[in-house]
Amino acid sequence: MKRIGVLTSGGDSPGMNAAIRALTRYAIDNNFKVIGFFKGLKGVLDNEYTELTDRSVSGIIERGGTILQSSREPRFFDYNFRKLAYSNLNNLNIDALVIIGGNGSFNAAYKIFKESNIKVIGITGTIDNDIYPTEYTLGYDTALNTAKEAIDKIRDTAYSFERVFIVEVMGRDYGQLPLEVALATGSEIVLVPEFKVDIEEIAQKIHIFKQKGKKHVIIVLSEGYSNAYDFYNQLNPVLKKYSDYELKVSVLGHIQRGGSPTAKDRIFGTLSAYKAIDAILKNQNGYYVGLINNKYTLIPFEEVINNKKTISQELVNFLEEIAG
Ligand code: F6P
Image 1: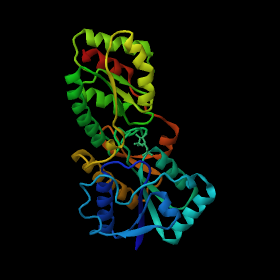
Image 2 (image 1 turned 90 degrees about the vertical axis):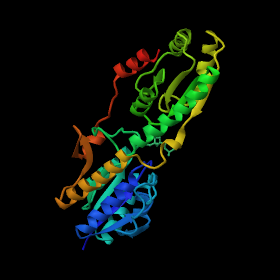
Image 3 (image 1 turned 180 degrees about the vertical axis):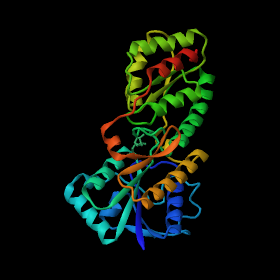
Image 4 (image 1 turned 45 degrees about the horizontal axis):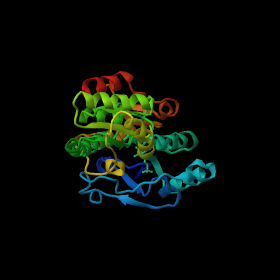
């Protein structure tokens, strides 16, 4: 019987369990044995794995995180350790490995594709939606909604005290998550890593919103733009020159990574797994399952290595235009 290995790697994202469940059951239906490696590539290096069965993936579709756990494995950057990983996979008779993860994990997947005889297929799994060129990555919608709910609550209290809030949102170096969180919450300002804004200009914008009668001002700050407390220390003295506005900080942090996946992420995880097994059945190698023009599509890992996603300045401007 042929064997498929599966692992989740890098930052976990809601919907990974839905993908593991569908992948396991569909692979078993197609006469594969499924080996789940624990803690990403660490499990491959340290031979920590289990056989996944129809029953062992029961009751997980609604759970956040990943039952296989995850890691960012630095040893995989070293070719000697990668050789050990390839030999461990060969000793276990793994024909194809499915890697569920983000950019870092797909870089590793590309190395496996180039350097070994093991077939490798990727399923996206990152709240950042920063993998090129797919339109969507697993977990993004849940993170977006979690941040939206948190900011709705912050806004209630911001209104009551007429405060200005800096809310730090995840998304690493790509601004889509902060931008869409800001659009969904009607926030007044969004600061994304792609576009730096002068601190004086930000203070002026806040002052103008206040003069227009706005009770609260919410600044959605991408973690990739600045640490929220450093940003507070920069902005607060400049803002005080305009008026005695009260500035507060809230860092949403890892709550954005957890929680039960939305319907969209459960379905995306499930159908990405379906496409991944289909790709293996068709002997495809070196691709990940992404969404292009809203269609599940196999995309070569090479594209991820050589390209970066970008966001539009126009939307950032539009958000501020309609905020007041
Ligand atoms: O890539 C997902 C992500 O949550 C990023 O948004 C964030 O920058 C990073 O992972 C945080 O990583 P860690 O869990 O190691 O703190």
